[in-house]
Amino acid sequence: MSTTGKKRDTYHHGALRTELVDASVRLIESEGIGSVSLRRVAREAGVSPGAPYHHFPNRAALLSAIAAQGFRELAADIDAVGRTTRAAAAPALVRCYLDFARRRPGHFQVMWRHELSEPEKHPDVQSAMEEAFGALARLLHDVDAEDQAGLGTMLWALGHGLASLTLDHQLDHTALKWDTTADDLVERCLTLVSGLAGRS
Amino acid sequence: MSTTGKKRDTYHHGALRTELVDASVRLIESEGIGSVSLRRVAREAGVSPGAPYHHFPNRAALLSAIAAQGFRELAADIDAVGRTTRAAAAPALVRCYLDFARRRPGHFQVMWRHELSEPEKHPDVQSAMEEAFGALARLLHDVDAEDQAGLGTMLWALGHGLASLTLDHQLDHTALKWDTTADDLVERCLTLVSGLAGRS
DNA sequence: TTAGAATATGAGCACTGTACAGATTGGGGT
DNA sequence: ACCCCAATCTGTACAGTGCTCATATTCTAA
Image 1 (cartoon, helix red, strand yellow):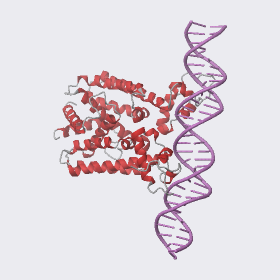
Image 2 (cartoon, chains in turn red, orange, blue, cyan):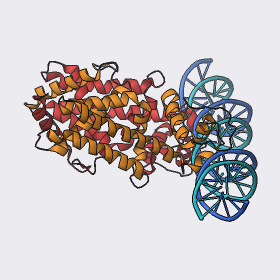
Image 3 (cartoon, rainbow over the protein chains, first blue to last red):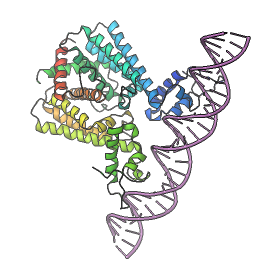
Image 4 (cartoon, rainbow over the protein chains, first blue to last red):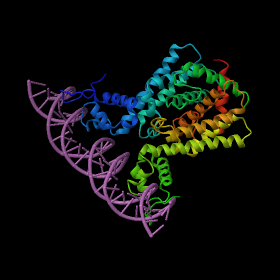
């Protein structure tokens, strides 16, 4: 896609910031997040080791940018669900969440790194996340539950848990497989819990 | 607790492996996982930079040991729930999961790192995790659901999602607060989903 | 007692994050 | 058209890191 590692004839790169982010995501998905270093990414973009520091103050800021981008795309996805789907909002939301995690595994991995969750240090991540939460609230607006916010958080947690576990291949030996369709997952989960709720 | 940074009069440390793990966990909880380096941990244990390599082949192995220890303790917790509690298994399980995440935030953070989930490279983590899944299955053995395994995974995912989100303080601006009691969380979640299930 | 296994040391290599001084260039005001 | 400044990029430098290895010390089992 981008001019990975190629020589440049111009002194300025032109779109370095974007390419640094893209190269990082590519690296995360191919070789794991451990191999994402500013120097490596710079090399990948065909640029000197110091160049990234004109776009990101440090390594954490680069990862933050990826996380923020992920949250913004997720927010857009959720809003799209609200506009297109006529089905029940709750299952659609969880499915949307799972789809996102599968489509952007690199972003998803970074979005939930504990070391990036200090709002002070990474306000862009924080605001992008609140954007996603906003989309969530809008989507559930029509559902009549006694506790809107609580329901939203619960569905978010459910989706997040399912996505994390399936992405890490940590459920491969259980009932849920990575290649199970998102619809199946969602349907099964809601059915199961509903059968359970009366008895607690 | 341990002899952090103190001089030793004996040439051999005596219990270096354990202290390396403990020091790492302490570091993760105080300064974040980013500041856990083998050299730093070695310094913390009052030992030379090369010493850890007689106990762990590399940095990932040290983190793996922490993860495995976490999974084993979680498995024990779940089994304890099965032995002591007479309440409904499902809410008790989720509460147990949340309690663990709050009590051992350092372990929890490491347990779900994507880069440690390749079973080939970290068989100890894998087996400890299966131990925890085993405890989960035993706990739910009496619950009559049409799909035992599915129910287990769903509850696991729910607990995992809730724990992740609250640990990261990423729900502080929503309905769920870190200082909410686990019981409240669980109760609310199950109530909400049950109210929802009929309509999908 | 003594050989060998286990453990610890310290030096060394390649790499990393980050800082900084100097080179290059694109764009706005004259 | 010019010039100047701010943005961008280069190259070098330094401390800290993972990991290796030859060497030193101690524990243990025979």
